[in-house]
Image 1 (cartoon, one colour):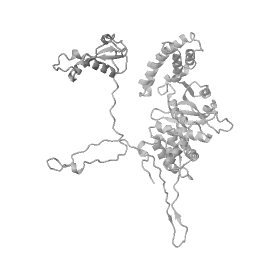
Image 2 (cartoon, one colour):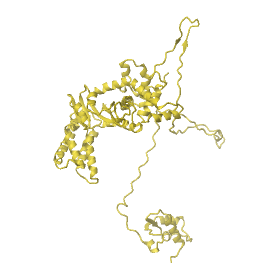
Image 3 (cartoon, rainbow, N blue to C red):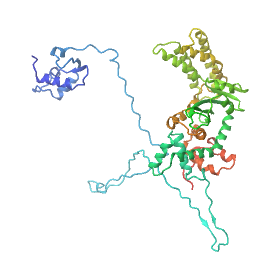
Image 4 (cartoon, rainbow, N blue to C red):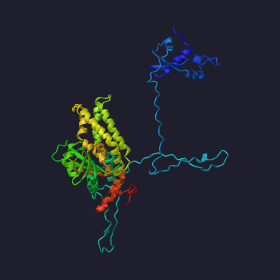
Amino acid sequence: MRRITRHTTLRTTMLIMMPTTRHTTSVSFSSACKSSTKTSSWPDAECLAAAAKRIRPRVVCSPETTEADDQAVIAPASSESSKTPRTPKARGKRGPMPSDLPRVDIVHDVPESERLCACGTPMVEIGEEVSEQLDIVPMQIRVLRHIRKRYGCPDKSQNPVIAPVPKQVLPRSNASPDLLAMLLTVKYVDGLPLARFSHVLERSGARVTRQTLARWVIGTSQALQPLHNLLRDSLLDSPVLVMDETIVQVLKEPDRDPTAQSYMWVQVAGPPGKKMVLYDYDPSRSGTVPVRLLEGWTGYLMTDGYSGYSAVARTPGVEHLSCWAHARRPFVEARAVHKGKSGKADQALAMIARLYKIEKDVRQASDADRYLARQRRSLPILNEIRQWVDQNLPLVPPSTKLGAALAYLDKFWGRLVRYTERGDLPSDGNPVENAIRPFVVGRKGWLFSDTPAGAHASAVIYSLVETAKGFGFEPYLWLRHVLRRLPLAQTVEDYEALMPWNLHPQDLITQREI
């Protein structure tokens, strides 16, 4: 029978306290404490520290481990387990609070009874320490009372006079411009359905039905229609457009099933930092829609491979570009079929990655420098891709994923390489896909438009909000500025002054003007 000693008991206790894994550690206190001069057989802290330096791995097979088992040393760990563990990423330092946020000072003073030195001298203030917390003030709803003074003659010799009614975005509505700006922001920027915003308002003390909110949205969009028209005019002045479409469901579209798909057609123009985005609603996806939207326009048009753009691309003066992001996608799908194996799809993706690397390198360059880089660096890679396609197209069955990817490249090759003709042409349709993304996120929340009028309202507001964002404006501040000024606009110049490209962030109204 195994003899139990205090030494064995301590070792066993330490083994039990270790995590219940296959491996554990064993410490021999007798050898670690040889130099100790203490007579006690129970190891002290010094012995434990010495033993810790001699920890070696053991295998614990069962609670009935024998003494011989205790002496068995496991084999060295595999190379995989012996790798140096990855060092955890250091947490970044907390940055300062935004300097433009308002500050509220809360002073914490030392009690007067503690401001007396031990020597009996009263202490004097020699400084302070400041720490900051981020705070939030919940939504506050208030009622603006417009008090119009009335004056009359005591002799009643003429009719009284009264101050005029201030012009409003919605004349017969009790919604202020700021409330309308918040309404458009929560739906079209934050993606909050009107029914939920109605509940938010009710929790804050104001009962406004979803139907009323919907009327306000449509009415405000109609007031903003002149700005949408100006946006269209400016966008169609651009020599380069990127265009795409996405689905939207409209329940009460005349002569159509409520589950039928309608479409938002989206156009993007302008350089980074000055992006113009234009949404248009149409129940159809036919090629007649882009023909109508781009009537009279000439320039370079970037689209995906959808055949609905073929008709407008045949218009004299329109040069059609194809998207490299769409050309790349089928190769990603082909690679997934043979996951873990390197093949022809990887070869194509590697060559396309080299093209994108060049575009990344010249992103901040001038159009002239970008054109030179494309001619000198991109064209040789494109020639390499073309030769690779010609070699592999006859060898790969067209019914496979890889065959479809090769066929896409072959079909749209002329449109895919056209971006190298100039330095201001996009290599893919990512700008319009980025512009569509906020709509897709919002659609997941509100799901559908009830009427065509609501869909048209969404097109107008998404256009203006995304364009304001494209020019670097905070959407709510821009909408608030516009809706306060909009009732006073009388001429085209007045409306033009409200467009994002004619404003600077410091121009926006930051305080209520009554």
